[in-house]
Image (cartoon, rainbow, N blue to C red; front, side):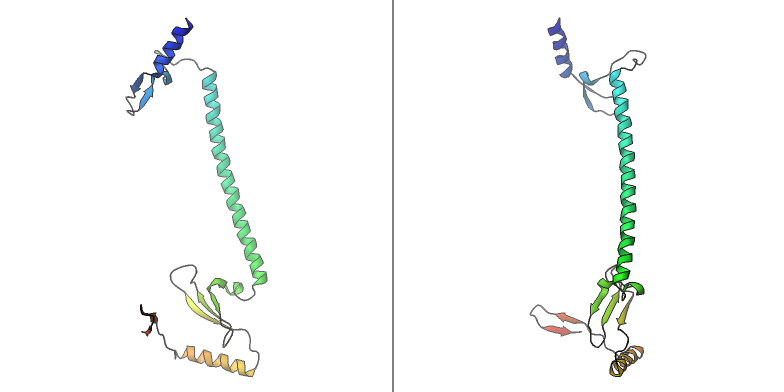
Length: 169
């Protein structure tokens, strides 16, 4: 009797069918066969139900975790900005990105290509210098201001050719 049952289950694993809904293959042993009315639920159905409930709970937990991580990232960004404002009295108060700044020191301290790091186009170029140190430094600052106001400057593009020579356009 036992061997007949084992033979039956072994045979069922070797029989396949085609689902009329999705045209997918299935094993006969994987089918839930019942007549006219659905069979009463058993311990396996209860276990499946608990598994589905656990999966939904896990998804909610993952969503909550992502929300908490995003809040923590935002809090960290704000804290970093607060610390940067404390240690960077030059760029941050003026809403300039320090990565956009190039240090020159003479005749001015910084040239800031505002917006260069964030996108393909810059908003403006800022000439940033500290307060005058002396009369000659202030005179130099005024000279730079006059040149910019009068648009008395040249724009040239330098290209390096394949042979290594520089071409001014």
